[in-house]
Amino acid sequence: MPSSNLISEFQVSLQGQRSIKNPNQCWHLCSTDIVCLSSRFGQAIMPGVTTMDCRPYLGLLYLIAFIAVLSAVTVSPMLIEPGSAVNLDGRVGRMDHAVLWSEMGILPGSIYSMGDYLCHQMGDRSLWINGSQLPICIREYALLMGATVGAAICFWISSFIDGNTKRATLFALAMVMISPAEWAVSEFCGYDPGMEVISAVSILSGVGFAILIHCIMAMSFHRATRRAVH
Image (cartoon, rainbow, N blue to C red; front, side):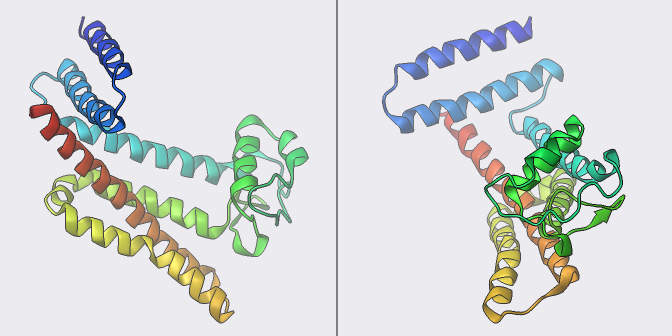
């Protein structure tokens, strides 16, 4: 069976990597193994598929993951009692409302808990649904929206981006820096840009982030492919 052969090859690869002390050699083998196993997996599902043909499946996985997270964040306020999540302003890196999250269902409680730990959850910087704040502020939510859009763009025009990887990487880096630059300027000048501006720049940075992931993935696969051939 193809699956048993893949598992056997992966086990042999792991045994070989344990005997290597040089981290660079270990990374060389790991990256090569990922490409080779991805190629074998793609060929097992669809005969004739090449190594680079397998990469779109990983891009699709990124897209599905972004959609799933964005959907979970969006529907969480709909799964709790109206007005249950209000006045959530807190600090990043700590759980400010653990008791409140424990009283919710598994999905909304988990999403709001992660938002509590990773975001300030400022009420005047959040979208409201069903009388409750979203689990994250508008900046993070817009970044997630942009990343989802960017992942979709990369999935549909991956061949165009792959043909201009260096330029696309520089373009993506510039887009990623838009939101931090806007935040730094607003903090330094002491002005309120408003939710519309924050949303717009964050969406652009999110799109850039997704394109950057695609470019890094493309360069890694190209490098690993050359190593696998040689």
